[in-house]
Amino acid sequence: MERKRDFLAKRWIGLFSILLFISNIALVGCLPKPKKYLSTDGRFSLEFPENWQSLEKEMWSVPGELAMFLPRGFFNHDPVGCIAGSQRIPRDLFWDIDRINDEMHQENFKDYQDVQIEEEKKIDLKGLEAKNTIYSVSDNGRKVKLMNCITMDNDRIYSIICGVPYPKFSKYKGTFEKIIQSFKVESSGNGLFNY
Image (tube, rainbow, N blue to C red):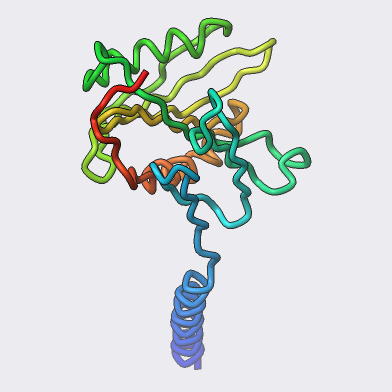
């Protein structure tokens, strides 16, 4: 009698596991697909979570060069978001990703205290060499963690910066990585430097 009960229990556990596995597969198939963003100048695209929104801003009076991605209801939730942008590269920095990364680091974080590089690595973004850096910075006593990825093509540098308060970073790290990995240069410049 006990053997039969053990057999039935194992069988139910097995059936339950199979049903759980099938329902997870079905759920993954029904998960919302990411939204695709294409800059108005057509230079770059990326994907971001469906429950986020994109806001495009003009930078130096040129549309399509800076976009923000924030969760809907941003002010009611974690202060988290990403910014993606592009700008022309000065001729002396052309194709030196390490130098560009260093100069951006100095410029972007000059007003912050306790800036620390936690991780720095080169990655491939659809055939383009990129540098992905994770920083922690202090801003008015608040510790923030940022993921900054830069890459370049013929005449432009592209930067994607994602950030969140320090304790929440691990919760959003996967989302940030997916946004960065989805980045694609859609239309390269002509290689001319028009200043």
